[in-house]
Length: 293
Image (tube, rainbow, N blue to C red; front, side, top):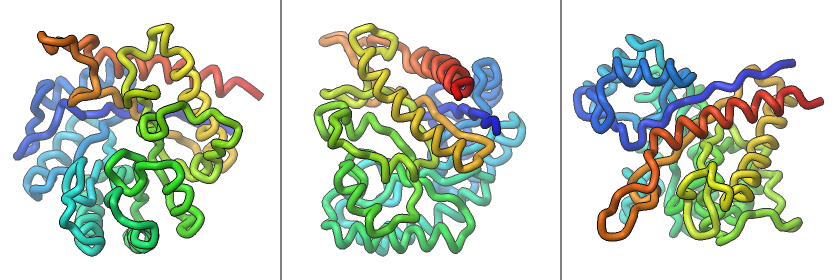
């Protein structure tokens, strides 16, 4: 059975302000036009906290015919509030699931928990978080990301062993940085994780950073090839499971990820250009992979 690739545009660096207006990149008409021009079926962006902004976002998405992946931070932001308890994280998640449903999200991409919690607390959190997702009927895809509970491949594998029904967003660049190497040793068996990946974020990391200066540069060809091989394994699992669609969000971003020249702080590449390159390369890669027996 054939499987379709749906590409989503990350609005990281092109964020939604209060009232549903877009900042940093233009208005929603421009966003929609750029998505259609570059083959994106929707956007992946933070779920606004304000109910009015959520309604405005829903209206804008419907007006432009864009799908939506809701991004939620259970700890309040990328770096979780260190004072928040497991209960507070779960309250945030429960409220966000309902908000994402109201906006019409395809699923919720969750940056979960806190890296400082001990394993028993992590397991308790994920068991209860998955129960919230099950009760809501919304898919919650838990993103691997530094500073969250899923900052490490080894912690994540320990969590999976005790909460096997979890589904994940694979932004493998974070694990490359944490491990300070591509996870290509024969002992680096990520299979229990890869078979549970729901969604892929396509950014290429390397041993000293979460984002290469440019994924087309020959000096990073090995890093690109490793990430692509991991994405192929996810696609193979999705196809074997009978999924009609697999989703990918190219996610090169600003905010300390794009390399800057010293003194001038001029970026070495434009993030929108990087994401367009990644989108086209992934589209071509998927088409070639799909033709293999």
